[in-house]
Length: 151
Image (tube, rainbow, N blue to C red; front, side):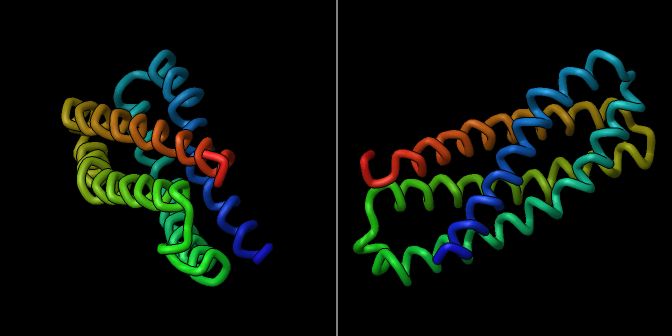
């Protein structure tokens, strides 16, 4: 069980922490210092490196979350409301990320390859909004997890 909890926490920290860093630190600096071509190229490459970690985190979160729920908590029927809420919010986050990856991120990469900076800026704006939503949801999940059954 300690392995499952450790992997679950690490996957959460990687995903939510990565979003926090990107949204709160990297984004404002890149917007202030870089012109569109360099900024969009930077973001396309940053996402290219970060998103495989998100996919790995999603897999680990699902596997360990289900492992903990069914082997320790006795299944969803026995799990507290905090577990149900974390699962629901986690699935919403995963769906949002899937959309980011397969729609605006794909188009951002195409825009950078073809130097279509207007399209790239629009797609980066979509990604920024969706990551902002996921960051808020992720921080909420952290709070719910911290409060646990006392919630």
